[in-house]
Image (cartoon, rainbow, N blue to C red; front, top):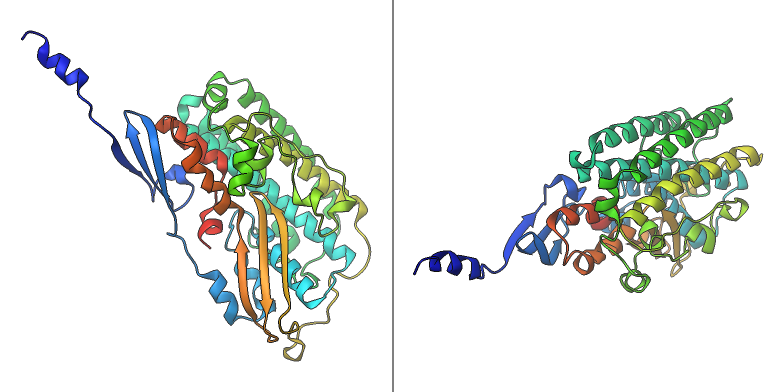
Length: 385
């Protein structure tokens, strides 16, 4: 009988372990629960559980006038507020046949790209924190990215009076115009951030631990990405060169020259790489906006009064989409002829992107699950709405 007990223990099948990750886990980037089924430390299957941050914003939209709603949507994807309000005002402008001025379009692009830079800095910084101190400086990367993001928010505050939820977009135009010497502040920020981004890339892309934890991990194929409706950096990392700013230009994006970074493997590393390269492209767009800013008014509508409440024709419907930092953010609006939407539906990129989780997590270790989730960059105000 000698050795039999040990052998029986070794041969025994302990089966699967169900482990709850979240809904208050730091690496879920919001209130999100993953039910992981494990065999040892390997993920066998996963069940995502959303809805903890549901705000009922689509139903709320039926109770407020069109002109009251843009600030409401800025609380959905709270890392890129301007993208939400921009998608809404574009849809309503289609609905009511209201054309914004050229200057307003340029200023919309300006704030959208500054917030894209801000959002990507959060994504990269928190991603470094997710990977942990074992990566060698993960916490340092987080602090550096947030330090540099503060400079973007300072510029937004100088422009709009608010660092984060800018209330920049209005139906027919924008609320704020540039101030004297704003161009100098933008160029100063651009020069600083380009230097910092190059430093981040040097540090991360020569770090063997970072490369080991990101290369060939969480691979998404172009076919899978299209099947679940993934978009943004998650889609482009698979090699698909699709961006609404290029493929279906809005707000005068056709006037600007910029590249679309794409990946080759669709893994965690490529998703990081696309985002950090997009920062440089966004800074280039912001510079082009400043250099070519047209003259003219910033809004095509008269000052808002109760007698001028917007009332699109009954039965009119419209859909407009923007390229948010997370992908295609769309708004569908249906009018009943009143000053309030009859129905509004949001197409959020984070919701579609996290549909990849049950497909790409199985077969990876728990530590890889953290890296994969961070590389998807979900915002759960955007998921749950």
